[in-house]
Amino acid sequence: MKAFQRLYRRTRGLWLQCLALYYAFSDRRTPWYAKAIIIVSLLYLVSPIDIIPDLIPIAGYLDDIVVVPLLFTFAARLVPRNIMRSSHLKAEERIYIAKRNLLKTLLLAVLWLFVAVIVVRYLVMAIRN
Image 1 (cartoon, rainbow, N blue to C red):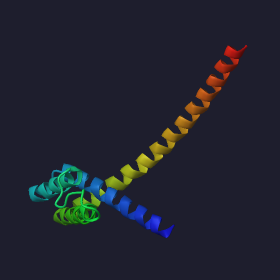
Image 2 (image 1 turned 90 degrees about the vertical axis):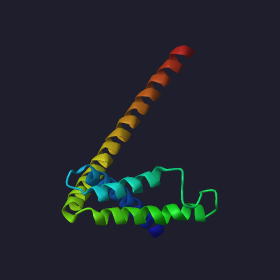
Image 3 (image 1 turned 120 degrees about the horizontal axis):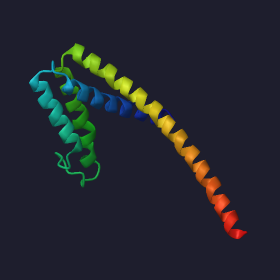
């Protein structure tokens, strides 16, 4: 269980870093060279072209596991600290809001599923009679 929690923390940290870089990129005070590295790191993350193709077992995914966090770290260090700090706060707030909205959405989906089951049962009973 600890390994899963550690993986969750790292994944959450990467997602938080990605969001923080997005907010840093949208800030006007961020220097152009930092914005260029942010664009390169995000494009590399979503690009199908890798340094090592994913078809090569283990090594193909290893570059994604190593290169992307390194690019994110490099980009974050180029952004001034005050901008990065405010971007991290915005990202954490966004993740909190997303969790809260996800809970509301799941609750609403369960409610709709319950209503759908009642309607289907009523229709089946009406057809049988």
